[in-house]
Image (cartoon, rainbow, N blue to C red):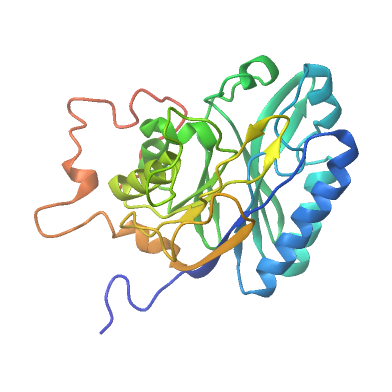
Length: 298
């Protein structure tokens, strides 16, 4: 029977790519080659939206600002973005990936969105973790990008600990959120008895309370004494992982088939519960004090 969600109107296979990249200028070419290889492999498996980790082309653990400058590139004119633009056009896919962005003398921990027609936009990380504060400048907006497959919002790693981010993105109409990550230490224990990290549960929670699918790609491996937590996942509009949560140690690619724009009716649970309308925006600002966008008119 035809309904508001059947048949699917934006059925897309999405991929979360979990792999190990390494910091160091001598590793940049290999890191970039790995990202392109993963994009090609995911596209060959049928993925149309492919999400890579935070700082996917550079590694994470910069010792000094000078070292970070040596890794950083302009967006979208630098060689890394240009390589992603070329492969996205060739394969007719959308790519979300993390990059160290250089803009004048400022550097940003940035996620870029690239589509079949080229560069779509970027998000500059607004919540900086630990030593990131000594390297990067903070972003100041939460853009939502219109694409042919739906409206896409971006967040980066530590952002998931701040529930305002996912709420602001969905209040502006995001149909799906792509989360690029280098999840590291959190207050112990790092993993529960099921082997999952807290960030995975925070992702599920953000997805559930906003009725928005989230594609969360983390990295694995060790780098300069730091260990990364893996546990990438893809959630449905109900917040539950589709196909499980990735291992904490191994490289992996997760896939899920999602009707991206089904998000638009998912918040209406029944005749009396409608998440956007149940929000008490008479008591708080519709965008929680954020002034860079407008709530979606429903």
